[in-house]
Image (spheres, rainbow, N blue to C red):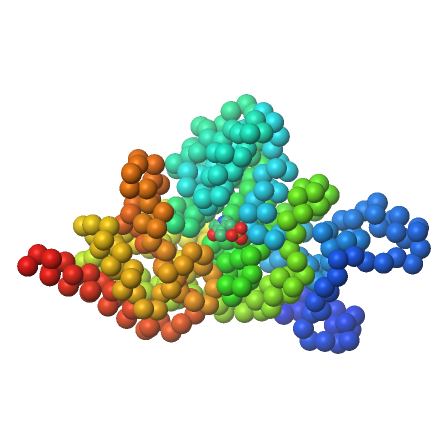
Length: 397
Ligand SMILES: *Cc1c(COP(=O)(O)O)cnc(C)c1O
């Protein structure tokens, strides 16, 4: 029988008798490991996937973390990287070669778009972006040389949903590898491997580490795929997570379930409190009744986490700026998944000189709900919306 969430988070792989019966796992801050004999050293070097030789590969603190993450995703193995982008690079470069083609959702994480548009073409790899997250759209974009489908569902500014089961099924029928960015849902709210996906990746800088103090990435899948990646891209690119960061992430995982619950319920309470305000044009949240793929979202996600966007009913960009500057508790910062609530308006990167180049409207404002009490967050957003109303009234006078 598979282990419960609590068993994985609090017990799995913690062999305390091996480290002085310490409750907390050991931080093995070392770069290399010694051997008693040349024969042992030779054996270890012939198979770095299963031996600790050098901390660019295996390290016991990372091993405890990797095992927990694999169990959480229902995967045979997981690798941890020094960033989500490190995991993305390993996933793409391990599965693609010169002359290959991939299909990617239209608005992935922005550095994935950079990979597809700028970096991969340098190596003779082309991308087709699909607007619609349906099996039909992915199939229609396929070419004879298509080797990979890249998914991110939901994506984390516009919260579009891909029909994961259906896309994975098309991929399987064509021998195409599927990769999904599961950062938004975490393994707790969505299990892509059980829906037929091959490789799952995370920016662990967000919920998994969870305290706005670690940059990390995860890649999980079968032993066969992960072992191959380990022996090639993982060791060669060297984007490995340092032991201290792995230790912090182990500590962060203890509270993953309750942090997610709080962040998620805060987002839902905030949405409910503001959705009918005249200054809210639209809510972008997969579990919101307005979401066009609400049903698919509910069929593949156990719950929806604490990140969402609004489109502000604003006449001018200045109104968006006034609204965001009026928030007292939502910190103005990128990222999400930590303890603190954040606001990230699309206007910060909006290109006003070339409006046609923008993926997002300048009216889009993204909120991350942290672990504060919901009243603080609700009051904060309502007072900022009301300032906007007063500002507009004053202008009209
Ligand atoms: C932050 C993020 C990434 C990149 O992860 P880093 O840890 O910052 O390298 C990838 N995907 C999503 C959805 C993210 O939010």
